[in-house]
Length: 300
Image (cartoon, rainbow, N blue to C red; front, side, top):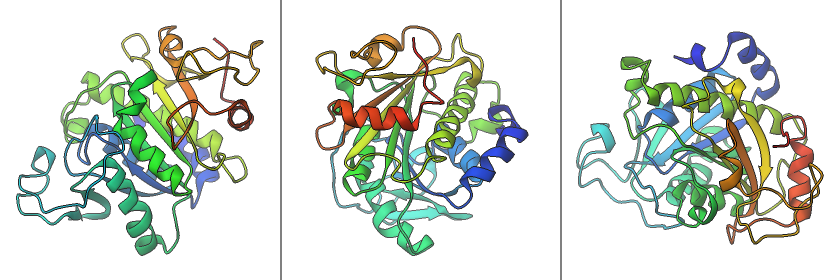
């Protein structure tokens, strides 16, 4: 499965640059969906240290909701843990794969505040939220649990990226091997490669990776006409059409909106946002990210 997502040559190069980088991986779709498990496997294979801390069940559309984790009154998604399981728990064969029976914000908070100190004796270097099943564009960021988790991390002082992809469905991680040619598996592999590509560029730069209190919203276009990660180009965008002025790039001080840019083909939109408000960041913060990602970003 992973060889389809990233070549062994590229994997070796990634391992050189990311050795020792500590990542908390979370989402709002649940700890057992195919996308997050594909990313977990790929990130570890690339040399990152990874802790998966995600909701026990699908918590899509819950924004920045928060609650105290509770005992399971029904099984975890896809029956990956039984009714009566404790509020938090881990995979029996891999203690770095964890569920939290609450919201995405609670899951990432548990990863940052509890799991990272216990396992690494230090905070994570970055939080990866997603890739979400389905895009989070424009005003959708306000209700997205994927964006909510990334926002929480940034507010706790941890750099974070919210990733979302148009293609895929809520299917178990077991389909990655049982249905290797399905559209969801193919999308998981392509989007995973794009996440790795983005991280390899950002994490090759000096710290701080992002401005304080700022996160990044990345959306991948549908894989229907994009058969590999190499088909995609990353474009700096804005969340809202009303947020101006923006950083001056590509001959303009007005960035394209992510909702419009993503319709232009095999596009990955990159929007810089304020973690507290989930609104577009100012031009100075956009310029900071633009400088970090210069080698990755292109113009429409």
